[in-house]
Image 1 (tube, rainbow, N blue to C red):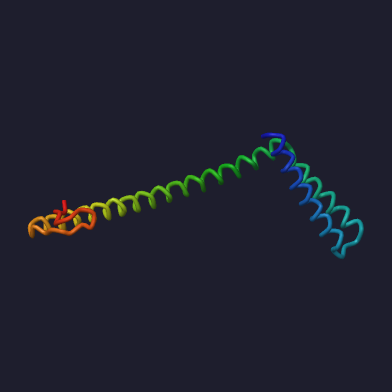
Image 2 (image 1 turned 180 degrees about the vertical axis):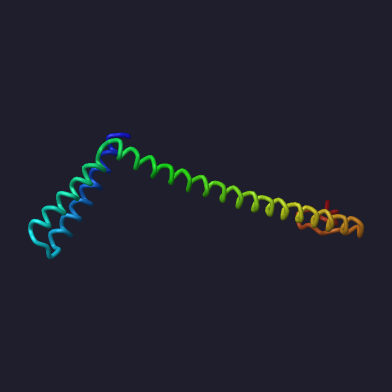
Length: 124
């Protein structure tokens, strides 16, 4: 785990603790109960801030990210394969239609006038 990761995680945990502290302070409780709750919350936070706990949490998060990325990659591959087959099928259909029309024109012996060259020219 890099220093940046630890710093970001520390900031996130500190913000969470601050929010929990504010929530506890604004709750209608007697002072002794509030102190007990704060002590308990800080103890849990200290436990979560231990390097091995932070690393375990990051490993779980990374595993979820990798699992999701793998699922997206598999879905993307299936979509790509499906679309590639459709594109190739469309290209093949276009080639067949072109060949068919060309054969029809050649059978009829069709000629076209082209403005660039005088006289008829055969379509090939």
